[in-house]
Image (cartoon, rainbow, N blue to C red; front, side, top):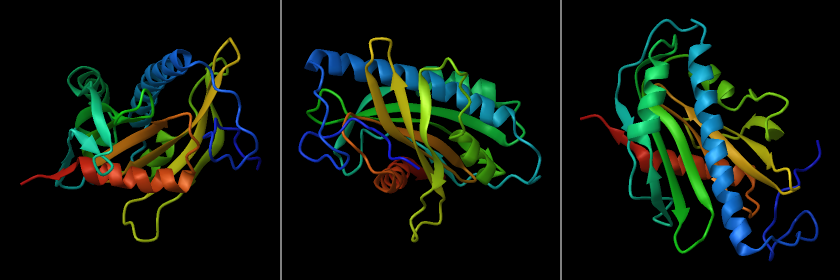
Length: 230
């Protein structure tokens, strides 16, 4: 399988010479467009995922934890930029109510930005509640569901990259977003699903991010957002 031609850091480029970056204003606009488009796509995917569930495991686990939106994640390096849980999150929750694999679901939608950066965002779209058939949910979260006309394409298919020490499974893929002017951005997205929480985390950056690193970061994001029910 060929390596993805992701936009690279100017000081470390494992795939060859880095491309000339667009002007800073265009880069910021590019990331803003990607984040907005990716968020809408993920919301649609999550809705399709839960609505297409099949009754494989008939029992729902007890609700022991929820997802919160902390002010920072990843050792405080990424700061909350936007919390859409009260709007987009509620819309998703209404969509999930008839799901076969979700019960008492609540949506969480938040984006975080690297402190001091004009771009480099971590976008989390997920939910908490009670879920079954979690392996199937996680796999479908990263399945390509867009039409052939969609500007977002799968570059590297999803694969399980769960660290050996983690009891929670995580899978990741590379996605590419293109524009009519020829610009493109390749970025990683990862997903987890357990009995109480599931989410898709997109790393919207023009710097290269290894999928294994993205998987580890995703579990750290999960840890930062997870709160036990007391």
